[in-house]
Image (cartoon, rainbow over all chains, first blue to last red):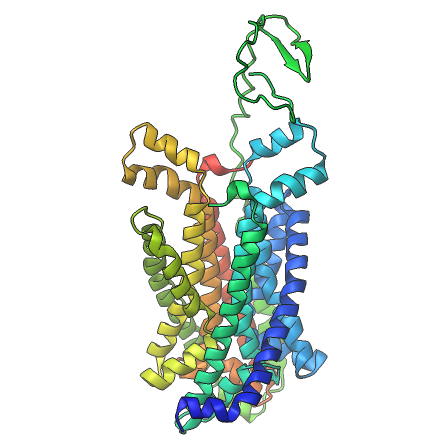
Length: 215
Length: 297
C-alpha cells in the first residue's frame, strides 16, 4: 500500500487525531502564554525572582517528557490530564525566558524617558516595555508551540490524544509494511499543523508588533 | 537640551527661538530656570565604580549542592527499594553508568554540531546580500523544527537503520532552529542607528559585525545555546526508541515493565544531568555577556 492509499483509507482517523492534536496544543499554549508573560512581568525587575522563575521553568522543561508523563500517570491517570499538565508546564519555559530577556533588554533610557513624561508604572509597562519586548516574546510563543507539537506526540505514549498515536503504532511495528506509512502520516500531519500555527503567528506578529520597531 | 513637551507639534529646532540665557528652558509654555543660575549642566554622577560581582558564591554552590543532596537521597532510597528480578536485570552490569555515559556523549556531540551549524548560518543570513534568503532558510528550518522529535527519529531509524547515528542526526536537526532563530533575532533586534553610527565612523563590515552587532546580540544567542543544550539532553532520552542508548533506556524500560524504581532512577539522573548542563550554560551566559549591556538600576 503506498502512502496516498494509506492516507485515503485512514483519512477519518487521521483527521480526528489531527484535530485533537491541534486543540490540545492550542489550549495549552493559551494557558502557558498567559502564565508565562505574567510570570515574566512579575519577576523581571528583580534579578533574584527572575532567575528563580527561569530556573523553575527550565527545571520543569529539563524533565524528559517521557519521565514527567510517566510520573504524572500514578497521580492523575492516563490520557488527557497528564497530557494537558505536561504540555502547559513545558510551554512555559521559552515564553518566560524570552519575556524576561526581552523586558530586561528594553533600553533603560527609554523607560526613563517614559517616566520623565509622566507615565505611570502601568502605562510604562503596557505602552513602552511590553511592546518593545513583544517580538522576543512572540518568538518564544512560536518556539513553544512547535515544541509542544512534538511533546504532544510523545504524550501519546500515555494514551494521550493526537497524531503521536500513529507514530508509536509505526515504531511498534518497525519492519512491517505499514510502519513507514504510519510514521510518515503522523509526522507530516504534525509538521502541517505546526506550519499552520506558525503562519497564524506571523499574522499575529504583523497585527501586534508596534510599527516603530518593525524591521 | 529643551525637553519637548509631548503633544506639541514642533519637535525640531524652533526656527525663531530667541536666545535664552544658560540654565533657562521652557516646559509647556512656561519658562523655568534651573537652580544655580547659569551653571553648566551638571554631568550625571558616574555610576559607582565598584562593578557588581557576576559570580556570587551562592550561584556557584547552590545548584551543585542541591543536586548532590537529591542524588544522595535517591541513592539511599534506591538501596532500600525492593528490586525484583526484572528491575535487577535492567540495572545489572553497570548498565546505569553505560547509559549515563552514552547520554552525555549524545548531548555533547549533537550540541557541538548544532553550534557550528547554527551560529555561522545565523550570521550569514543577516548579512545584506543574503538577507532575502533568510525567510526561506527560516521556513526550511521551521519545517525541520516543526517535525516532532519522535517522528523524525522514527523516520531516520527507518532510513538509516537502528543505532546512534540516526539518533545524533535527529538531535542536531531538532536543536538547530532555536539557536538559529535566536541568532537571527538577536542580530536583527540591534538598534539600526547603532549600526549606522558604526558604519559612519568608518568601521568595516567585519568590524561592525564583531565589535557592535555580535556583542549586542550575545544575550539572545546565549539564551539560544542554552535552550539547545536543554533540548538535547531531553531529546537524547528519545534515542532509546532508535537503539541509540542513553538514559531513556532506563525510562522506557521502567514504563514498559511498570518498574517504578528503574523509571525514577532514570528520570532523576536525566534531570540532574540536564540541570548541571543548564547551570554550566548559565555560568557561561554570565561570564560572556558584554559589560555594557548590563542593566543597572
